[in-house]
Structure formats: structure tokens, C-alpha cells
Length: 109
Image 1 (tube, rainbow, N blue to C red):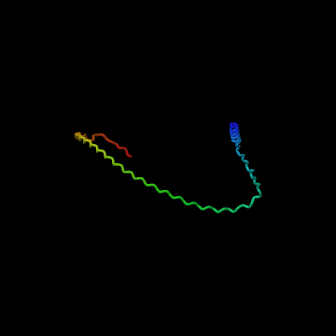
Image 2 (image 1 turned 30 degrees about the vertical axis):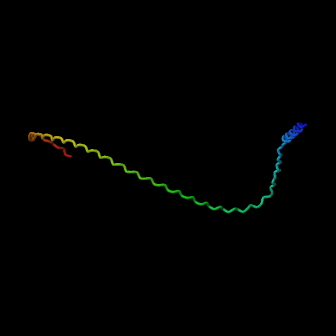
Image 3 (image 1 turned 180 degrees about the vertical axis):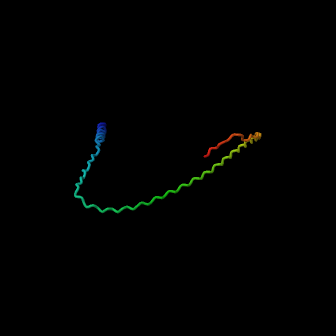
């Protein structure tokens, strides 16, 4: 008999633990708004203020000026050519004969 009571208590404990139901959540019914006639329009709101002007960025530094290049060398002057020899003086020609009988007629222009 002492085992039957212990066995019965264990059986009841398991039975109640197995019957642990999760509660059923019932959703509230949705409220449906029925539109009525439109009311008058509201007043126009005031205009917002203008935002502050942003800061101007700093101007960048100017780059350094480049150096001037070196001047090139002047080329060497060429040699002057040799002067040629002066040619020999020719001999004087013989004296010619005087006119004779030849007549030269020069046409007029």
C-alpha cells in the first residue's frame, strides 16, 4: 500500500504537468472609423527660418617657383681658312695694227 500512494502521487503530478496549457490570447476587435464630413482647412503654418551659411574653406598655399635652368656653353669658333696665293700678272699683249680699209656701219636705233 505504501507503494500505491507514492505511485498515485507521481501519476497525478505527471498528469497535471502535462496539462499545462498556454493561455489563449483573444485579439481585441479592430475599431473601424467611419469618415464624416470634412472640416474646414487649418491655417497655413509659418515659414521656417533660413539656415546659417557654412564656413568658407581656407585657400591652399601657392607652390614654390621652379629654378631657372643653367645657360648652355657657347660653341668653339672655327678656324679661319688659309688665304690663297695671288695669281701671276699676265704679260702685256702686242700692239695691234691700225684700221686699214675696214668700214664698220652701226645701224641707228
